[in-house]
Length: 569
Image 1 (cartoon, rainbow, N blue to C red):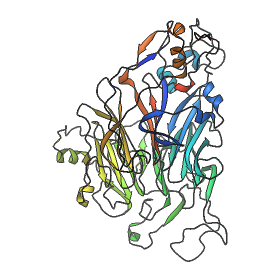
Image 2: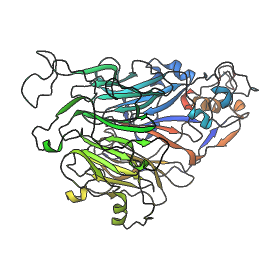
Image 3: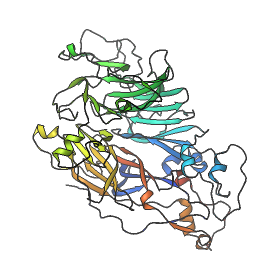
Image 4: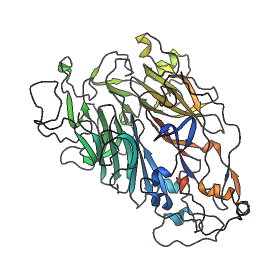
C-alpha cells in the first residue's frame, strides 16, 4: 500500500533577489505526479523549460511569454496557453517601465543597472493585449489526437498544438475532456471555438457526419459508412460553430468538457440587451445534453441519443438590458461538465442541473438521471443551517465557484468554505447511505485557513487555502495521480511547494560580486496566488503567480549575456 506523505507547513522565510527599480513578477509552473516520465511524488516540483525547448519553441522562452490559461480537468492530457510579450526580454538591456514596454516601436533606455532585464509591470501588464500570437502547448496522452499535433500516439508525449491563434484577446479559454480538446479565442467580433481529438460521439460538435447511421438500430451511434472505420478523429484544430448557422458576434463566456459531452455558454448584445445561450453536444445516455422533451424522458433509448453539433439547451433565460443590474442574478456565469452530469451556475448563486444524478451529485436530492434542465435554488442557506453555521439572512452565502468530477461535485462559497455532494472525495469517510450522498458535506480545513480557489479532476479535488500573511497551501483529497498513490486520500492533505528561483537569480547566486549590487527584498507571501490547475490521472500541473502581478514565466528571466562572471578557472 502506498500513500501520500503528510507534510508540515514550510516555515523558513523565502528570499528573492530583486533588482534596484521596481519589483519584478514571475509565473511559476509546478507539477506533482508523473509528468512525461519524470516523477515528483512528495512535493510540487518545477516544470522544466526543456519540455518547451524540445517542442521547438525555445525562441519563445528567450523572447518572453506569459501564460494565459490552462485546461483544468482532462482525464489524461493538459493544454497550456501562452502569449508572447510585445517587447522582447533581453538580458543585455536595462529594465524599462511598464509604460515604455507597452508602447510599440522604439523604447528609450533608462540608466543601466547590472543584470537588469526588461519586464512588464503590475496591473498594466495584466490588462494589456499583446499584438503577438497566442500558442498552445499540449502534453499527456494522445491516443485520440487530443493534443492537436496532427497524429495519434500510444505513449504520452508533448508538442505545440498546430496553428497560431491571433486576435486581440488571443487564447482566452481551454477545455480538455476524455480524449478531446477545445481552444477558445476572443476578439471584438466575438469568440471562436477550435476543436480536435475524438469526435466519434459528437463531443466536439463539428457537425460533420458523413454517411449517417448504418441501420435501423436505435442504439447505433457509429459514423461508419460501409467498410469505413467507425472511429472519427480530428487530428488538427478545426473551427466549430457555436452561435447558430449564419450567426456571428457570439462571445464564449464559459466552456467545459466531460467524458463524452461538452457545454458552451455564449452571449451577445442585441438591441441593447444581453442574450445568453447554453449549448450542448455529444452523447446523451444520461440526459447530460439537456435536450430531451418531458414526454420522451421514459423512451428507451433516450431521445436524442446523440448530437453532433452544438444545440441550444432549453433554459429560460430572459434578455437583460446591458446597463441594468436589476436582474443580473439570473444570468449564467459558468457551465460545468462532470463525467456525464451538467451544471449551469447563475450570478445569484442558483443552479440549473441535468444529466446523471445516480449518486446525488446534482444538488437536487435526486438519485436518477435528469433529462431536462432542473432549477435548483441556492443550496447553501440550508447547508449552513444543517451544520449550525450562522449567517446574515439578508446576505446569505452564495456559490462562488462550482467544479465537478466523476460521481461528485463541489462548490466554493463566498465565505471560503468548500461543500461536496455525490460519492467520492467528500473530505471524510464515505457513508453507504444514498441519502447522505446527496446532502452537502462540509470539507474541514485548518481553522485559521480560508479557501481561495478550488479545482477538480475526474477522481480528486485540489484546493488552495491560506492563513493571514502566509504562503498559500495546496490541498489534495480523493484518488490522487497514480504515481503518488492508488489509495484514496480521505481528508485534505497539504502538498508542499516553494517558489523556485529564476535562471537569472541562480546566476547571481553564483556571482556574489554582481549580486552585491542588487537590492534584496523579501517576497510578500500574502500575495502569492495559484492562477490555474490541471488535474489529470497522471499528474497535477499548477501555475503560480509569485505575488506582484503575473508578468511573465520565471524561466524567461535568463542571465545577462554581456556580464562577466566571478568564477575563475
